Length: 140
Image (cartoon, rainbow, N blue to C red; front, side, top):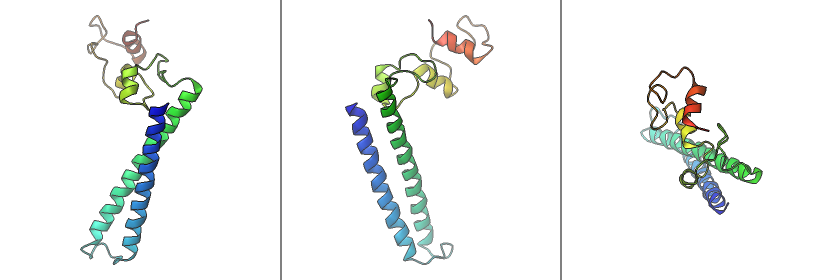
């Protein structure tokens, strides 16, 4: 919990810093020539605004991810994969405290096949569907 609480504090501080940066950038733009196309500084202000906005969006997503992880922790489902229901390994949660899937399911969601599983099934035969691949990747 303390790791997630610390991550939340860092994410909230980053969001607040970026909101201040965006406010300063917007204030700077108000005080300059509004014709970005012909103002040599206009492109710079537009770029800074776009960059800070993208970073702020990322910080807000990260804060949301941490809040969802804290909710899963309170619900008792933090260490469980949302896809297959099996435990998310402690090493994965150490590396990615906001992870919602185990490594196998995350790889499948990203379109990669699990480590050690050839393009077909475990026995080299073609895998006909995702559920068959998931069964082979998560032995019971």
